[in-house]
Amino acid sequence: MKISRAELQDLDEILKLQYLAYQSEAALFGTDDIPPLKQTIEEVEDEYSNGIILKMHTDDNVIVGSVRAKKEKDTAYIGKLMVHPDYQCQGYGSKLLAEIEKSFPDSRYELFTSTRSVDNIRLYKKLGYKEFDEKKIDDELVFVYMEK
Image: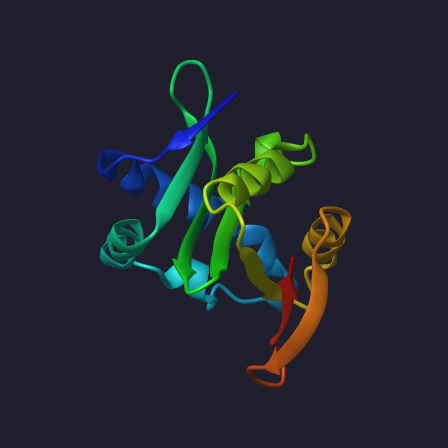
């Protein structure tokens, strides 16, 4: 597997991967009405223009993972860490997260996930992230914010 910076022509494939990878998150809530499943290609292009999107790809250039981040002041805001379901639990998420952190050296790193995403929280804690805030969105959805 190789990790490199995504190109503009990769964004459609990354968005399709996002729709696939976030099905497990949607299942935690019993609905497809979660932001990653409603994001448009225009919104991904905007994130591409204002930050960094990395892709993890096979030798034959199939994208199987991605993460994105943007920096504001001294904080890199990391989001949309995803790995194709067939490639999960093999350390690829950790590698993507480490690589996006390298893109913003000497920064504070911040990310968030749902409190129901216990596997994500466990991974982030293992990689040195600590919880610092929670935000209740509605009766079903609570985000936990983590930093490193």
